[in-house]
Length: 65
Image (cartoon, rainbow, N blue to C red; front, side, top):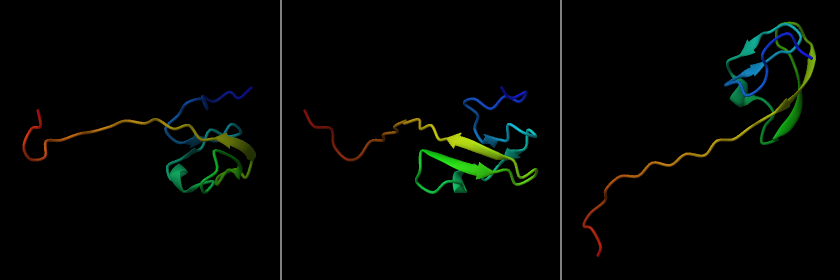
């Protein structure tokens, strides 16, 4: 188990050294799970990408009855 909080974070956190990768969205291509080496310490980690869906709407033209 890691001594760093690495579950459900906004960015990838290295479980070896705690480094937070603020460009996490660039990692792993389209894969939901991938291996990554830490940019700071070089430690190997398995990364799982989680998705959250949200929606926005706005008025357009006349209202339909």
